[in-house]
Length: 197
Ligand code: C5P
Image (cartoon, protein in one colour):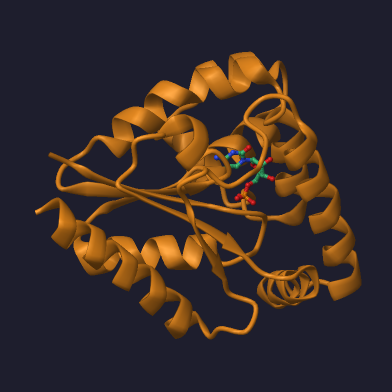
């Protein structure tokens, strides 16, 4: 049976880095689900149609990681038809053998409510803004304003709002190095795998 790891949390908390490392450690597939919403956002036109017609090439555009693409993504992500159009792809991805790690906002709550491991990654605002600013070579104050705007929109929307699943383990990476955060996540996955036999 496949083993699904759901990693959710607000922007720039460390989800992607942790998800990639966990996938590599266990030989699991990895999907950064934010890329799907970013691709829909930058594609333009009718968002629901863009989501329904998303192609692998759309996910390879070079501009998907920009702050602007993040803002566009969070706008289209509030549209229920967009979320519905992306659900089947994500669930199929999650069911792959021997396992899959998906990171996003609603993996543990909506996409994979039965995931074997659910981790909700958080870090304080200033830390997240500083990390994202360093990554994109941008101004920390501007990043902070953008992250807050995005988190507010993601948390307030009616469709799959940003929140931890009831059975998620909260991982606060504010005072952690990347290695420490990855080690904590790997330990949790190892423990659950052993328990699952
Ligand atoms: O994680 P990332 O910053 O790439 O996500 C961009 C935006 O896509 C988020 O701000 C959120 O609005 C949306 N998103 C979502 N559900 C997911 C992943 C991302 O709504 N599973």
